[in-house]
Amino acid sequence: MPEKNYVIVDIGTGNSRVALVSQDGTIYDLISFENKYYKDLLYDDARYFNPAEWKAHILGACKTLLKKHDNLTIAAVSSSGARESIVCYDENANAFLGLPNIDNRGRKWMDEIPDKAYIYKKTGRWVTEDFPAAKIMGVKKMHEDVFARIKKITSVSEWIAEIFTDKILIEPSQACETQLYDLDEKRWSEKLCALYKIPKSILPEIRFAGTSLGTVSEKIQKELGIACDVEFIVGGADTQIAAKAAGIFADDVCIVSGTTSPIIRMTAEKYHDEKERCWTNANLGGETYIVETNPGVTGNNYQRFKNMMFPELSYEKLDELMSEKKQFLCTASFSSLAFSQKRSLKKGGFVSRAPFDAHLDKIDLCYAVLADIACSICEQYRNLCEIIPHKKDYILGCGGGFRSELLRRMISGLTEKKLVLHKGFAQATVLGCVALCNEYFGTENIHDKNDISVFDPAAFNTETIRRYYEAWKVNRDQLNPSD
Image (cartoon, rainbow, N blue to C red):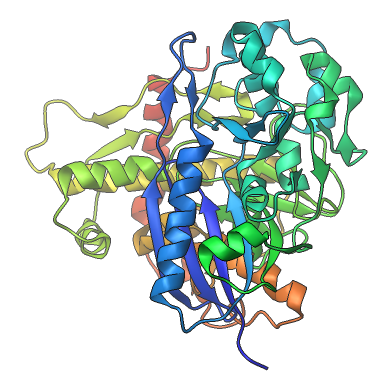
């Protein structure tokens, strides 16, 4: 049987990418591009994007890859996308407005939402401006004409499905992000829509990850020069897609380290926390669940610091230099959430002893930023364990944040668990889509069985990061007192 190849579209927050991948997980080529946003000045903090602009970039990248690798036969297209982001359609099924996860236009009116405890119980999420229901509510408050145009919505991952098939739908892993989806009933909720004063008619059909929408449209076939039998396989939310690539099963914990670093636990039954310390998500397919804690922004902090202070050095070289440090001279605090407290951390910075230590250098600062990520992740892991105890001796890891081997050692040491990463962990969203395509075609997923790296805390000295954690916690709490 000839090898199958797939086009995978991954819509992120800062960047998006299109990859050409084989069934065994080999990434032949990949094109990424920056996502462009616009400000809506009628609000304090509102962003939107033009779907037509993004679509042009996506299809342009597809054309470039397919032309460059015209010797490869494509079997299917699939997609993953950032959570909390939606695309809005008008009565002619034209995608005219994109509301990304970084859009906070609904913040001003959150106090108007009644029955917040009920919403948390049914959706697994606190009532905040982060989620699409609040974004749509914000549109209605200030742009009644725009709100009236909205006849359907979908997530950014399933927006890709619409581009390729003309079918508007949504996967449960993304439907649950809207705060209009009932996790118990596994369907859209009339009552939740009524609480947000949003018509249920704008909500699309629900389809499951790994199912086929049939062949891509004739228009796309001609535009991209692909065969008439290329199918579109439903993907879903990027966190759940990445966890699939990491090999998650029931009762596993997985850290998906990227822009943020969700720490997730897969459960067979829906979990409701009376103290509201976590989120509960629908997993791919909607039959299992993902319980989540999250330290907020992590990977972006390290990337920005590196670009500013060490643009000439590779991440590997930085790891080498930081690993030479036998003590820490400062701590950093830049993660953005005290998640279980439902509290944003507004103040960040470096803390060191006074007067300035003559031995403190840029590598010490870099170590502190990386260790801040490790400590923030570990703290959220411990919070998750307080909610649902984790008895397994390992944690799964994936995402670009784990490119740093030092970070892997830090997390393993702080959690006292083996950290397990599969080959290609940095491209987990792409490989998760590959796994869905393989399952649909009945092809064995071999990329998740080979080349597994295990970081055992017993194999290295964890004293420095443990001492750092104790100092970090004191300093961060002083920067952001809970009272």
